[in-house]
Length: 322
Image (cartoon, rainbow, N blue to C red):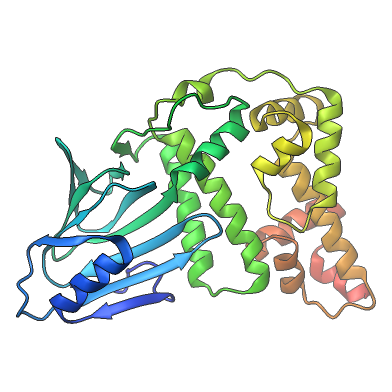
């Protein structure tokens, strides 16, 4: 039973009505097998939507009749979020309910129950992507593989912030994919990865809870120069850490102390300055919306408020001068 709340609806990947065809499709895409539920002679309405981000993939799947699917061990971490109904994932001895209160996180072999009314969003994340992000955040190399607890509580403040980022990303995707939107998608994905690391229980959680050392003044200046030179590229923690030789958490701490803002806030000010230049450029025919997107602002109302606060007039008023 499917409804209008199936995520990623503007990016359909498959719709299948035969159980045999569905089995072939699931094996080809995920190496997954149907281990229970549907009988081969009965029709089924199986739908899957997919969106590929720079580092990860979002999937939303739903089936008109109950199914049990078996997924093999993988180097992809699979994070299951409930969108409607409730599902169950069995991983080893663990039996994890996927509800509005908790998500399931697994990379090993597992079986997933899809009841008839269940709609899930599955976020497939390469483990090495998370490991690189964690090293950039903390400045500490990992001596052993990164592992996560299978249950992720969603009612904690950190998890709620992560879910807000996820909803913003889904909204941006379903609003339509444009070239400027690629910058926003990449930055939201990066922020979502950081929020996930800060929300999920892992064997390296203590690195994120440990107080970070301060960055040197020259490292802060180098970070500023790097962001000014790369203002039109997605904000990238790994690149910033590599350019400065400091961990992202050290840079964030020292920026707050010495600059009164975070590196992201600094980059935002740089982009507002670029937006002002574009709005005043007599050779440009960009609208306020175009400028906002080019400069990495997805929320036009927020862009207008931030711009007015920074320069004392709205973007549309400044555009009239052009």
